[in-house]
Length: 489
Image 1 (cartoon, rainbow, N blue to C red):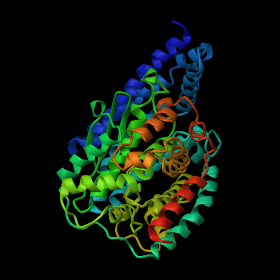
Image 2: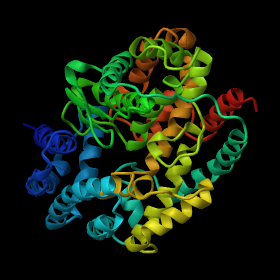
Image 3: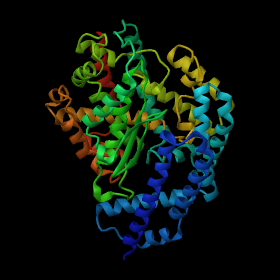
Image 4: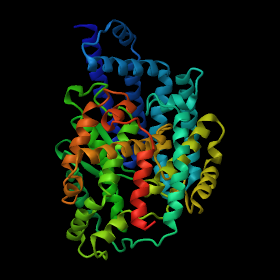
């Protein structure tokens, strides 16, 4: 075997073990008994140690030095293996195990604290997570910017300064649009109770309508919806609220966007570094375009209105236009995952600034709740009413995902570019969506974005697909046109 072939065999086995580690996380969120958390922390730490050892094995460095790429894909494989090897080698094995052990424990503590509205119960373990992630960031940065080093894990070749510049461009237009819309009368909203079993049944139908392959996936319930896995085993979760079926349906569609990306990657890349989404920003572009530009469109909501009438009978909204307005209501609220398209990115900007401050040491964990509440009041104009609607609402910090939040807004930016190109490429889009048929749209995304996996750099894959350099203007233009029409501005 050549050095390249040996390296790829090693990479495939490492990827398989990484999938096992991911399955432990999926089980912890969906089916694991609560009392198993301490043991699961040890299991997660053990497999993290094995993965760290494989990724830092000196033999990998020898193979990289000797390997010759046979083609473009091979060169990209070497690029990704080298990036992972260099990053992982900077992190001591003891630190990698400590992070896995602590975040597995912290996740359970966060879930309990969120359920009981007890911030104080969560802060001690969050301090441990923050300290460990800062230590990791310092090791990765090697004298550079600590936050940029963490961000590299989720959005390669992007800096916090670039993201801040994008956010500074977006914020004034988003704030102006929000202010104008909130001054208008609010559309009719859903009222009543919606059977949770019926919600789950319809959510699986919606997943299939967006091309989710149930032979290689499944839909379960979790506190915080997520997608897990790649290739032949890609699972999603959603959640139900008897008073708010949209939470279930659009969480499902969102996670299907993530899952479809993983399911549609070229099978030749299975269990290799290219066999997964290239970045979380590109990943989020898929989930957001599925959820919003397609799933919340006038055409698709017209079809969904009929499906809900079949599932729940008369639920108080008389026609498709009123239903479309209800789906797209701009409203006061606290929860990022329930935010409308106009305000969603403002939630991300809040988290981005706070976590940068935590990582820089400019904000202490003890002051986090007050800082969150003050910033929320300044940005949204009203006070946080309880911790589960404030700094305890997201799972991300409990599991150490610092640098992850800004990729959500980048995903919206990328989705705006893709949607502009998609509308030109699929002239019958509205007619298809009105029949619940997303095949042309999702097929275009699969061909232009998803099948490539990690072959191209994040901004490159978006530029290739959309024919433009990624920027926020298409997203902002789309939002202003949609919500000006909806609210008669």
